[in-house]
Image (tube, rainbow, N blue to C red):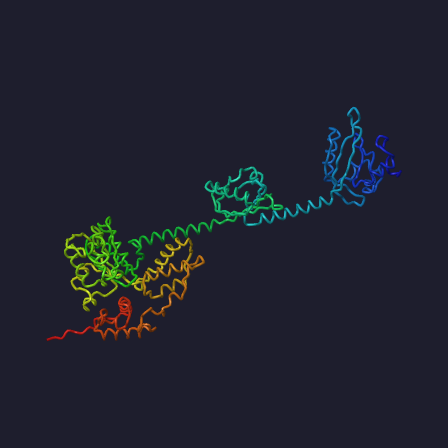
Length: 601
């Protein structure tokens, strides 16, 4: 028996005394017994080795520096309480080793009672938890460092449990909401959200719980002053072994400025749409240039009358749109608007289309058919490309304009009609009259109220608004969004001569909307090459406008100033008549100076 080990009483020795000592000394913990008053009466070898003192000197342990000064009041109070109540105790404390170093221990004390239930002694086991404490301190240090990092982040961050229990929010979030962590944890989920966003976020949260997938949403969160700001909330789950998420980490980025910018952009777009509606004045006729405004002013004046209108201008300038605008603002707007493209109908069928036919009037006339004039009775008929009508059809049209009556092809019955006629052409009818291809009396019947549509070259101020209008129109159909127009593209659109006018611009924008893959609208520069050849242009395929002008003037000189007809300049140059007329206007060629002057008697 070691001299510094007190001999336990006989009831502590279930076997031999030596076996009991060996058993206690082999335990990887400090084991001791105390009297009912808390004095040590027995310790194992681990206790003696740790403190480096015999049992006799250790009996006053409560009054020495064996316990860390910071822990002494707490330990003394706990010991006094358990000695008084007889309840087991468990606490942690730091004990001073023989070399002066303190280690953390976890103390477990249990009372031993006799047959009458009286406490006869206390059994105490001390487990060294120094490494665990160091790990906890390290973990706490890391936790504090992480919290400091989260608090310094310019985002609101929070941690939720598997069922969205509130666990943690950083200082940025708490300061924004105006609450403490404890108060925030007690609040119901979604209490800071805008009422209009609660159900939307709840639905997304439920889906995420079932799919265990990260998600993000734009939500409005109430500030401490009662105002709301927009945030982009990103939710990311943390799962163990691909199971249900044990945590949901949330980062909220303030996007209020971005949302306001989007709202401003949307308002600007709405304002632009309203401005387009205001400046267009008439349906899809978009623009506010002086050239267009002058024409639209005349449209507004003539619309309320029943005058016959002749609309001239290059191809693609919007002549049919003007005709429809006149009809819709007239007293006939509740009746039909019938449009006829005279150039698109074969010449042998145009009379039947316009005036109708009787059964058997010609091969294929299997039944009686009403003509376009009868269908437009009480309303408006629009005769596009009226210069393409044959002489016979021109005569029949003249009768309708003069007498307000017609006859079916193959019929003898006179049919009275009340139709307003609006005609359009891209040809020079004065030149056609001079060449004998168009009736002079019909020209004067059509030219009661002339309107000349300006080319897009003469209204370049309208190009940006037209581009915006067409982008909006076709992007909506293509389910695309464009935030801006590339400046280089816009400059290119403004400098391009647009031989096809608004229709060509419309086609270019529509095609570009389809192929453009970014939110910045761009146009392929190759589509706007000013050196492109016009298909079938023959002698007009030269690149230099001066050469082109000389070629046209030579042809006009040889044809006596006539553009149309078998001996006209168009036939000599082997180009479509409308194309040649367009180029004559573009090159500002005076056709009249090539016409032969009458010989004075």
